[in-house]
Image (cartoon, rainbow, N blue to C red):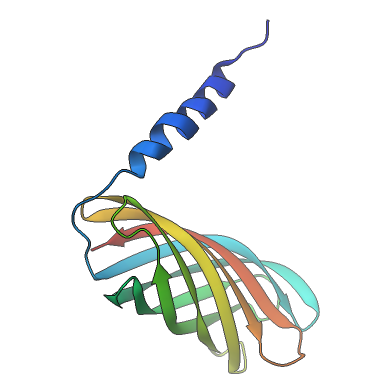
Amino acid sequence: MKNRKPLALLLWVFFVDVPALCQEQPETKRAAAYLTAGPGVGVFDEASAAILAVGGGFEGIVGGGIGALVDVAGVFTRAYPQKFGSVSVGPVVQFRRSSRVVPFLTGGYTGNFGSSVEETNLLHVGGGFTAWQKRWGVRFEGRFHTRDDAAFWSYVSFRVGVQIR
C-alpha cells in the first residue's frame, strides 16, 4: 500500500489550516511596513536572466480597503544589468480586511535606477496575500514590471516577506 501521509497532510492543510486562517479578526489596522525577498525572471534587451529582488516598503489604507503603497528594492542578476534599484508607488486594494488572510491587488509606476542601468520607467501590476498573526504577518506577492513602450525590458518577481502593523 502506498504511503498516504503526504496526501493526508495536504488535505489537513487545505480543509483545516486554511479555513482557520480565514476566521474573522476583530481589529483592522490602516498602515503596515514590510520586508520581502524572492526570485524572478527578467528580459533585459532581448536576453532573459534569473533575478533576485530584495526590498521593503510601506502601505497605508485610507478607507474601504483602498490605499497606496511605496517600496524600494534591489534587483540582482548575473546578466546585464548586473544590479539595479527600483522604487514603486501606486494604489493598493485589499479584500476581506477583517479576516486573517487578506488578499490584495496593486499596480502603478516603478522607476529603476543605478550605475549599471539607465533610468527606466516601468508599469507594474501584482497581487498576493498576507496571512496575519495579531501584529505581524507573512506576505506573499507576485509582481510584473514592464516598460510602457515596445522595448524588451521587463521582469516578474515572486516575493515572500514579513509584514508588521
